Amino acid sequence: MDIKIINEFVRFDEDLDLFDLAQPYLVLRDDVNLAEFEIEEWHEMRVDLLFRDMYDLLPNEVGIYLGNLDIILFINNIDNPLNIKKGMTLLYPTNLDDFDKFRFVEDPTVAKTSVKERLVVPNKNTKKDKNREKFKENGFSVPPTVLDKPRPPVRIENGQFSIGGL
Image (tube, rainbow, N blue to C red; front, top):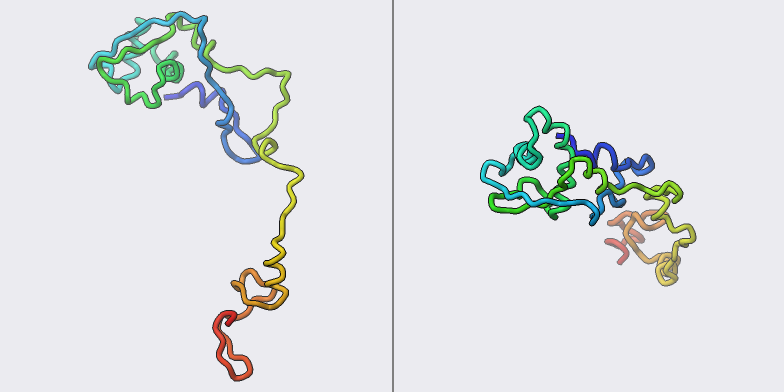
């Protein structure tokens, strides 16, 4: 099943190679007439039958509107269509043309920035711990991957057996 919100509205961020899910894509509207529909047993796990009965559609017409399931789920605060159970009452737009009114449309006058650009802090300086720098300068042992010149973890120096920095 194709969900319209994923196919048409979620933007792919080329820089991060991810979908940008931080943007709002659906908004509640108070200017759309909503009707109530009570779920029967045969509607459970069958969103196609749910749409058919809500809008009195023919079986071959259901597929045209099924991509708008996300709107009905959003209006009723349902995260998974499989959670629709017998006895529930769902709100739905009375007119099939009202689905697009719930979709968020970006203002073209606002500059678009990628997620990467919004998260970057340009003036961030790396801080160095002065005590750690002194520790390294005095030749004390730290894990070998941290030293500029790694030391072997076990060594013999001047006839003495040494483990680590001891």
